[in-house]
Picture 1 (cartoon, each protein chain N blue to C red):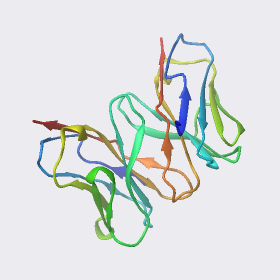
Picture 2 (picture 1 turned 60 degrees about the vertical axis):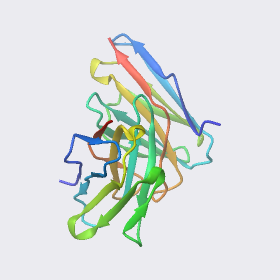
Picture 3 (picture 1 turned 135 degrees about the horizontal axis):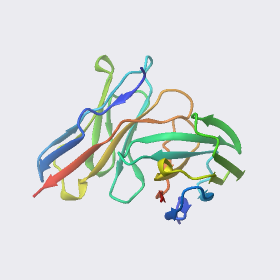
Picture 4 (picture 1 turned 90 degrees about the horizontal axis):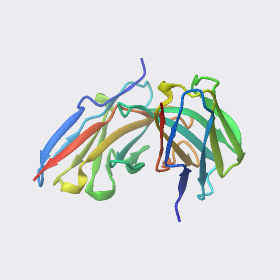
Length: 112
Length: 112
């Protein structure tokens, strides 16, 4: 079945440590790819997106993501996590049309 | 200057009631969406309208009826509310598949 998978429900990292959040999709063609962040009680904010071209995409707040076609992955990374990064992160794909399909989300906890 | 706004932010009501949630965007976008985020934070698209026309309806019960009086507004009316309708409902808008969707702050609906 076509889907978006975020295998990690929770991740805890120390402040200043690096971060990688995983996302895999199972659509035949390369969909448009997005990462959104949701802080508690808030709406969703776009971190970055990939449509084509350079497979390493830079986003806001120091985040980047790399598209790997061979692995159907679009993992989100940050070299040094700040306490304010604690939130829930959603990978999403637009496989066709305007429809966004979301992964189940990964909750990031940052310990000081 | 809110880009996508929703009212109300919180809605608590009894089973069987009818309620509406309003959404407005001032971004000049052509397409608007409703998403439902359940208690496990899973986000799923419900409806999408493009220039006041319904383009996506994800097998949502017909108790849910979206209405778009103009392309800047997309309201969600829910009849005969059920316990399972308790969720956070997000409105979003964009100008096309490749464009990021801008999300509203959400409406937390609690059905008692």
